[in-house]
Amino acid sequence: MYELPLFPLNTVLFPGMPLRLHIFEERYKLMIGRCYQGEQPFGVTLIESGSEVGGKAEPFRVGCTALITEVESLSMGRMNIVAIGQERFEIQSFQYDEPYLIGMVDSYPLRNENPSQLVRAGRGLRPLVHEYLKVLADAHESKFDLSDLPNDPLRLANLASFLLQVSTRQKQDLLETRDSLKLVTDLRAHYRREVALLRAMVMARDQVDQEIGPFSLN
Image (cartoon, rainbow, N blue to C red; front, side):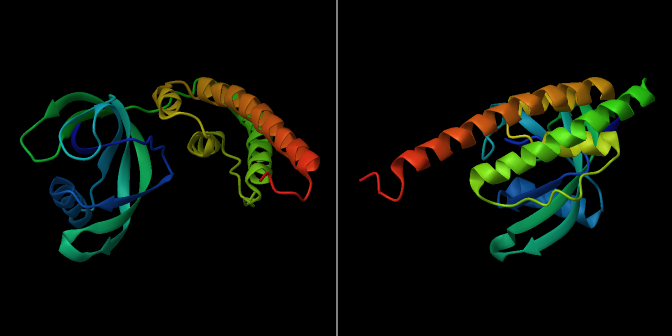
């Protein structure tokens, strides 16, 4: 068990994934300044109840540590930071003797009891993520780099969890999953469903475009 400063947010962070924050509250200026100077991580936790800005927030008990990699200093002590997710943790208790929340936490690693099955499941997830990004790009008429998806199943699972456009509560469920094979299996189900929904959305949009043609709806 170890002591970890906490940053409750309306987002879910996964290991290896980036987090960009604008720091303007005095309590978080202090916390981030201490973490950056000491080269120490802070903990990102999804807010279960309360507000992200001002006042108190009650976080979910499972979060992800974040290590600051970039700091842009602004006026009045404000700053923009980039941090990278490191490892999952579980809060055992809270301390309230600083302006910001502190947790006594334990590591919350993914179990990998079936390595060969995990590799096979990861191979099944990879094309689904690829297809999801391709259909998402079509839906938003934009482009994604599809050439750099990791082969490692756990890195792929963290990236897939980060990319998936579902509710923060659903992402929290993914973060709290203890077994790596279950995580990848759940992600495959999510991606199958989301790819089907995106395809239907693109088809409906294209049909409307064909019916309207070059004329304005006005």
